[in-house]
Image (cartoon, rainbow over all chains, first blue to last red; front, side, top):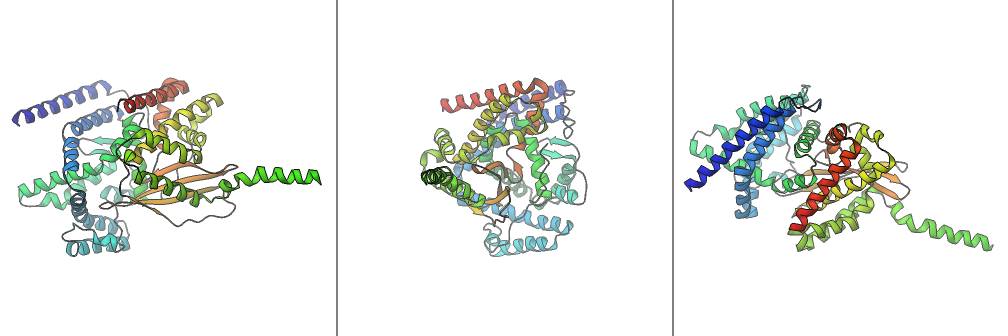
Amino acid sequence: MFNMVKQTSGSVKKTVAVALLAAALSGCATSGNQKDPVEGFNRAMFSFNEGLDAVIIKPVAQGYDAVMPSPVRTGVTNFFGNIADFFIGVNNLLQGKPTEAASDIGRVLVNSTIGLLGVIDVASNMGMEKHEEDFGQTFGRWGVGDGAYVVVPVFGPRTVRDTAGLVLDVAADPVAHVDHVPTRNSLLVLRVVDTRADMLPADKVIEEAALDKYAYVRDGYLQRRRNLIHDGNAPREKAD
Amino acid sequence: MKRGLLGLLAGVVFFALPVFANDMAPDVLVKNVTSEVLDIVRKDKDIQSGNTKKSIELVDAKVLPHFNFKRMTQLALGREARKTTPEQLTVLAEEFKTLLVRTYAKALTEFRNQEVIFKPFKMEAADTDAKVRTEIRQSGGKPVPMDYYLEKLSSGWKVYDMEVGGVSLVTNYRSSFSQEIQANGIDGLIRSLQAKNKSTETVQKAK
């Protein structure tokens, strides 16, 4: 067991070292993509995150996926989804969408009670649809431009604007404010693992699709954010 | 009289046959193909356990005839499309088709208990371009929108773009394509697509 921990931390160190070396080497190698002025740094951070994922997060998520029965998985995802719904509501309010905000808060009330602390998503069955909002999107709605694409260590793809949003998202995160530290840490870890496990199927498809995984993930992220800010009704980009 | 009858016969042969595909409205086409393919996937244990070869055969037979890969390739190339010769475009479209079919087939092997909902569809009779909206619902997750863009050709409605959660599976390649073209030209892009297709082929064989 100790051996394994040692080995793992060894690989992490190695990954960090490789990533930093790659960053130093490719620091000036930019391809001139307007949205990605710090591509050299981003590519290095991307491979660092990929390494971290391959060594720790993905194997744990795969184990979790294999062991947990599907209803339990859904329950865990719903539980964290319910906690997230409150600030999704706040963000909808900040974006001037009171109807959506009311529905989000309604979801929290219904799911926290009838839905047994959020484990069962009763609200979706009642027709209160789950939304996806965060502070980065709220800034986007307010007209803040997205700025350069950046790959944030551990958290992954963002833009400058979404990184600012991420800081607020983390500050407002109810799970991070649980007083009992062991409970808080267990919840944070469980949430990371559960979120990662939900993404396992998409993983394989991206590997199959991407010519250059870095660029595929970057462009997918930028398209996805654009779509989210327009709540799914983004105008179609020009053909060329 | 005889000529008139022949003409009538020719008319029946030439026009009556393709009428089925031509006449099918875009939303009906998407619905039929999706339902048919997913029904097969739900029953096929091999595909569910990750048999990509079988899944590719399914996509080749049922989905491929309704896609316009030339248009998809042009869309993915963006303004770089002007730099291609017709021959290069044909080769590119062929390689891009292989890549997209494999991706689609891979996604099918990951399909479990999701449910596909078809959103209300509206179009004018004269429209030659349409967007068919569907939604993939799964327990414990937010529904994922999946939209199909179709254009009307003489051979019927053909899909030229697909968006999953707002991410186009076609234009998502645009910047990596143009980066490759700027570095190594159109032929460089063809080579890297061929290499990519070959590498996934080997992986599949090894499995």
